[in-house]
Structures are given as structure tokens and as C-alpha cells.
Length: 416
Image (tube, rainbow, N blue to C red; front, side, top):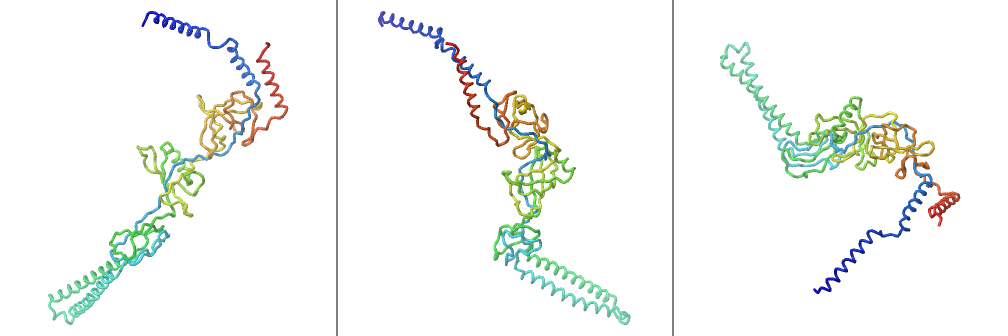
């Protein structure tokens, strides 16, 4: 590169550096424009000072009895579950139930072919009659030989033999009777009956098959009454134990969405004797009469157990409680329709939309439940009832607002 071009590039670089320095030192805005944000801020502050009352929804803190509940997810379990199986083998002649049918204890469920076992019983009965006849003969011989007129002609050895023969046949008859009873029991097992009252499930085998002892035929589940098993955190164990000591603990079963109560006639049946070290929970079981069959084994339900009742609790809507760096607080509406911030402490939930306040609030005090995000301590408010909307501005209010905006514009502009 020639010396001439080097000088040209050096001059251009110096000019660029000088231009950038002037821009940085002189600023990017004219002096007249720099005053605009301050004027705008002045107008904004004037508008805030001239703003009217803030419309908010206001409710009174109510005093009412507040029930304290413990809630958990529970599983419905049958009171008893029995798998019905025959105790003897043979051909399954008939099934005497309908699947899904409610059966009573002792009802006939199935019939096994009884002919083989009937023959065993008849054989034992015939052997008994045979031994009874021989026993009768042996007794007659012994009684005749042991009579006074014949005893002197009979050897003592023969008398002992006859006596022992009688005892032998007596034992044979007793053995036959035992065989008959055993055969009769086996014969009764050919009639398979329901061991409990419950609902019959789907059958596991069809009639006509040859089954052996222990083959499952059907499962019966007892649902009147029925159990609900659930887990609670260990911190609630003292409250549950205290409620048990006070009397029967009532329990309601709700659907999974808590939209409606399935049944509220339950009661706490038992609390397990240990706490799980893995989950920090303990098991409990409730019992329901279930007369309407609203609970079914294996069903998931939400369990709501009433532990106690707080008399005269202070209740407000849940959305009225705000949370800040110093904890929970609400806005209280004073008689002059200004608001003040009040620190509170919430307790138990009341229904789906209310909460009980344990500290910081009295019954009858008015609190803001909607619109509190636009407030600060000392703000003027227009109190509205729940569901009420603010009235539209009148012509006089609109005119006064327009005059305030016009006057504010002239003041912010200043003399020219």
C-alpha cells in the first residue's frame, strides 16, 4: 500500500473516533425533549391523586360452627372374600347360581355327581348290618353259656372266647358306623353351598367338567357391610385418637372429584397399630352399611372424617386472604370506606371456597374478597356485594372527570 492511502485511512479513523465522542458527550436528545418524561410523570401523579374510589367486593366475616375434617384417598374392600371350591372330586352336574347374583349363606351353588360316594355310604351301611347280625349271635351264645344252668358245663376258656368275640363284633359295628359317617360327610360335600352371604362373581368353570377337590368355582364378596381402607399422615394420629375417645367418629365417602357424597353413614372401625416408617402414614379402616350398594370392592373414594367442631369460628372467603413477606393478611374496610391491611392467621378450610381465621379478625368485620390487588392501605373503595357490578358513571361524573383531565392538561403545559 502506498503512503498516500495510509494517510487517508488514518484521517478517516480519526474522524470516526471524534464523531463517536461528540455523540457520547452531547447526548442523543434535544433539551426540549428531555423535559417531557417529567411532565408526563406529573400528569400521571395528578391522575392518580384525582382517581375515584376503587370498586371492590366486600363481605362480612361470619361466625359459625366449623367442622374439622381429615381427608384421604381410600380403597373400598369387601368385608369378606371367599373362593368357593368343592371338597370332593367328580363331575360337575350343575351350577345353581347366576353370575352377579346376591346369594345367602347356605344357598346351593353347585352339585357334584354323588353316585360314587353314595355307593361308599351304602357299602359301609351293609357292612354294619352284617356285623350287627354277627354281634347278635355272639351275644346270644355268650349269654346262654354264661347262664347259671349251663356255666358248669362250659369250660372257662370257651366263655372267655365268646366274651371276646362279642367285643370284637361290637368294635366292628363301631368301625362301620364311623365309615358311614365319613361317607355321609363326603356325600354332603357333593352339594357345594355358599359359606357367606355376598355377591357371586364370574364363574371359573362350566357345568359338565370333571373337577377335583380345591378347584375354584366362583368367588363370593360380602358387601353388606363393607370396608374402606385409607392412610393418614402421622401428625393427625393424636387428633384421630382423641376423636375416638370422644365417641363414634363419623365418616363420609365422596367420589374422586369431591363433587357429591356417595354415602355419609360410615364410622371409624379401627386404627392400625403402627406407623409406616417409609411413608410416615398410618392405616385406618371405616365400615359402611352400604345398603344401596353405592360402594363396590376395589373402588377409589375420597374419605372425609369429622374429628371435631370449632364453635363460633370466624369464616371468610378463601380469596380474601393475601400472602406477603410478613405472612397472611386481609384488607379491612373501615366505616369511612377506606381500607387497612390486617395480619391474620388462617386455620381449616370450610367447604370449597371459605377458610376459618384463627387470629387477627373478628366476626362482623368487613373484608375485601375481590379487587384487593388494586389497593394499598388508605385507599378509598366502593363496597359491592358478591356478584354485584359497579353502577355506570352519571353524566355529572363524566363531566367532572373531563374537566379534571382538561385542567390537568393545561397545568402540565404551563405558560408559553
